[in-house]
Amino acid sequence: ATDAEHLTSSASQTITVSDKQKPSVTPPSSVSVGNNHGLASAAVSVGSATAEDNCHEVTVSGARSDGGALGALYPVGVTTITWTATDASGNSASGTQTITVSDIEPPTIIVPADIAVNATSSSGAVVTFAVNATDNVGVTSLSCDHNSGSVFQIGYTSINCVASDAAGHTTTGTFGVDVRGAAEQLANLVKDVLSFGLMNGTTNPLINQLRSVSGTDPQSCKKMNDFISMVTKKGRDMSPEDSAYLITEATRIENVMGCSL
Image 1: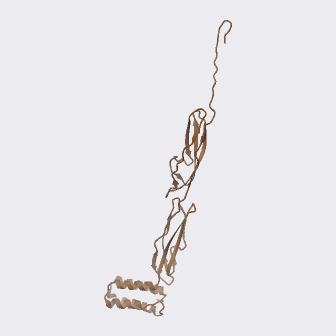
Image 2 (image 1 turned 135 degrees about the vertical axis):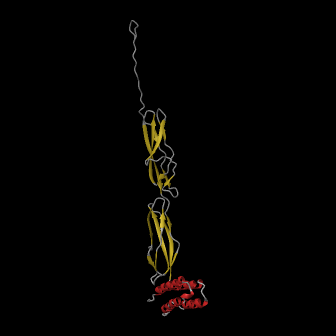
Image 3 (image 1 turned 120 degrees about the vertical axis):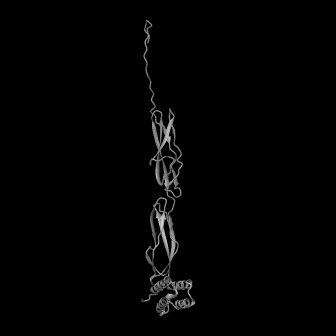
């Protein structure tokens, strides 16, 4: 300002313009993938958010809902990434991206090879077995249509097993149990006697006695008892171990035939 004497004075005014406008942020598209083989997780390329601001450059960062690093594996399920854009004035805005990892892998089931056993009675034999299953996330159920430790009848029985996981995937496995009856056990016992390498005077009577046994012959039980007596009498012609083995096998066959001992 200037007066008539040309004297002047001045004053200043400050104009402050503050940046109150938040930046805009655009997160990447959501991603859906299947798990990596053998894992309960997946490697995912999540991309990066883009941002714009009216005044300044913008810093963009992402944070996972599970606290993991953006480049780390993503677990089966849903993980949310929150993308935040911040400008130099401290204004910020955020957007979210969803990462969905689905379990696409069925369980693996491990069943035994076919099992062959001798019947111990006319009902068959008790058979035990182990069935196992693994899964990248976890097995929720494992069952078979026949239980380990139960009695299996003479002949061949097919056993079917099923493993399931939490995603509803199932895998089946099959194996068999073959329970040998009296006729098959008799045939094997003949082979055993022949394998001992005994003198013909010992081997031939034993073989002939076994071959005379038939499941339809009412005298079969007596013939088996006679075989055991022959083994006992010829014990000096064979080792104690071989003699005991033949008697044990013959006694079991009698049980399978339903003989009253």
